[in-house]
Length: 626
Image (cartoon, rainbow, N blue to C red; front, side):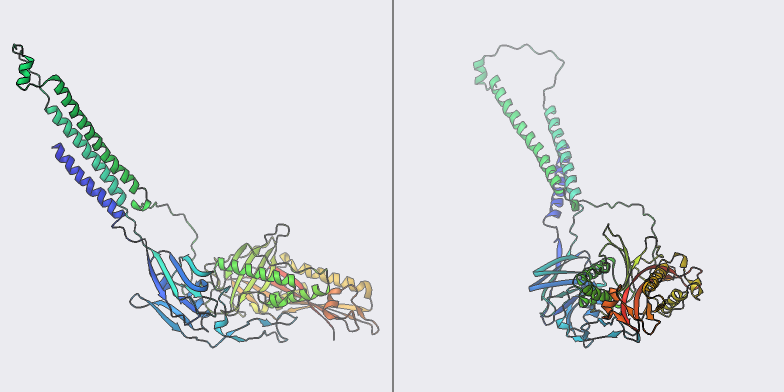
């Protein structure tokens, strides 16, 4: 019976080990599946919809083959369609039968602005009425390179063949192009991983090895039982008397000699030893195969560990809210580009280069600084815009243009640490983000609670009545505060006790007055006035329904003679001399400073005052008084 069970065990072991090995070899499916997309090369751009990339689970490996340069980028589908709205492009989408379909999409707009920059004058980027004078041109879509657009979350370039692994959600798409002029590469392959793991292969092989070992034990026990049953048994009766037997007669009668018995016994033992070694080698081979097959993790069931969830803050995105304009990584890349471009423009004193990444008050102060540095060798440059790290990103939630993003960046320079706050705007899908307001935060500044970057904030309208003061009235109210101090009607609405700008302005007034009195006491006088700047305010909502508002305020001082025979000389004021081009005037001079100011404005009904967060003040212009 032991032999029967041993044979059964051997059969079961063979089946289990064979099934396990078969799962890892002949029955194992492919590790990936691919979809080839072939276009007719009739357009300069190819957009692969997110539904195609997400048609199968797992990461997507994109392979694009081209004759020369290959460009690939990815971003939100709606942003990509807006960028391509003026161009003819090939759209790759999923059809009704879950098949990949390609079609050529015609332009929905006639042309795009070739240069969305604003024609700015020395007073801060607008005309005399305070309305921005925008110069727009046109360009053909085929002449527009996709490289470096601020809309892309990431981009890649390669010559010949480009392979990139992505894992994009359904609302993102991929753009494939060459250089925006040549036809887009026509051979595109998307590959997805396939789960071909065999979680029962390891248990089957190892289990088969165990059953094989059990069968071997049963077989050895069976042999042992048979050998014991064939041994002679002892009897208790006395042996009968025997007579001598002749050896010769014994041989004649076929008797077995001692030597023959020994030789035969030796052969039997040898055969038995060989059998034992063979039987021992058989399970060893099975166990080795089991170990070899079981070394791979996908040959075993994966039991996921369940950790106890830790409590975390819950962020609820309002239903129907648009997505944020940029991601954190996107904002970091945009800030780095702005920092690099402005640094190069500062080094070359190139206002045209600065205009590609600056606008409004931020651009106006740079232009004035370039003029002064060209005329005054020792005139210092304005503080650089730090590239990283971006500590705070607050993007506007919108799917239209223009778009706004607020960032707070800490300088990596340990010798001169600064914290810069910026408002950046993008006028249309084809233009880049440009910084319109740039200021410095004080070390003691506490920002209000802001939404997470992946949630974003709504932009507050200039005439909003949901704040204690509408954004479009804030600059005028603060200018009145500068002019009239405690006599201003807005004094109680602002946190003047912690305002660092007001004392700085008063100190500058005193310094300018003292300088004039040193040489022109009794023959000249100086007056000061502040007014709202021409640039529109920018306001982004905070979590407590308040807003961070950036405004522009002008401070002007006019020095003029009080005696008909007197003149105002600029011996000690090379900056005004460089901006006006004269060294004296009988009518006097008017000097204007531009203040870029960031406020926190509480919501309507709050008892909290309007609080200054940061600012930047710089010389803007000087002219001869009429």
